[in-house]
Length: 285
Image 1 (spheres, rainbow, N blue to C red):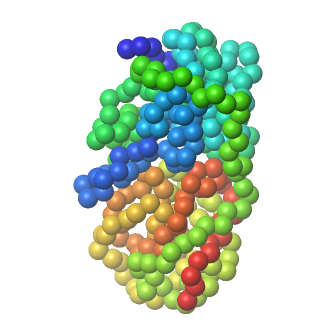
Image 2 (cartoon, rainbow, N blue to C red):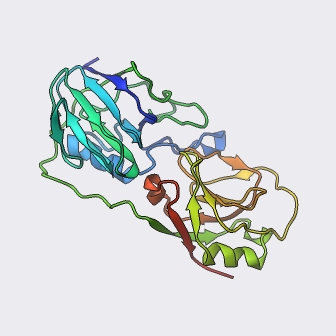
Image 3 (cartoon, rainbow, N blue to C red):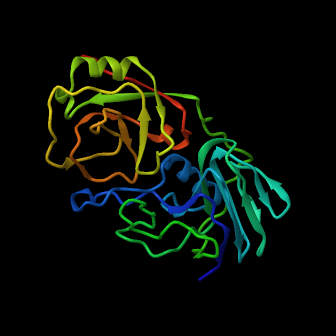
């Protein structure tokens, strides 16, 4: 082991993530991985890691970590305060952390999640080719707890020669493109008028599995339930209460409620706080 991270404060939910484990849905294993893969790739590039290296996904309340060896780190995603011991740092650029120093990531001022890369990556054992924590199936390492120690890998490249990067700012209203199907024929014309003509809000019970929405219910034309069938990332499933649910990285691979459509890009939902407005656009009937 070339060094380790000691978790002094894990925060609300801090997990190990990389780009996930694609190719196993037929075995009931979702891809998982960082909710914003672009932000995770950027953090890795800033510290000289391969894009596939594992880092940390830090949710809402921040965390505090002590590094046993000197390392370059980078943080992308939500707007947060960063400190190395008492020295302020900047998100979106490489930061030097001396051996024994404490890296503090503050609560998110805007957005929800941050992605932390450390040179060499987090070297926990891979499961099915990925080090990602899957919060639904339990594959990969569990969510971090105070007192945990995570091994670090060997650095392979120098930090990126940049002063600052600028990521997209979290928005108060999201417009999500949706492609109808495969079970859009299970819904009435009124359901499509409501889906495309009204605003929804993100529910507080949303998580890495899915973003639950609150708003106009989507009435069905077909009663009863489906046999379980495949579910993909971005699927908009409609349970019995008629309130849509958008599946995210840790989604199940099968489900029995009808899917009215599939969102083209779910990454904006990674930073969507409860109460954020969501509007759908796409082909209407």
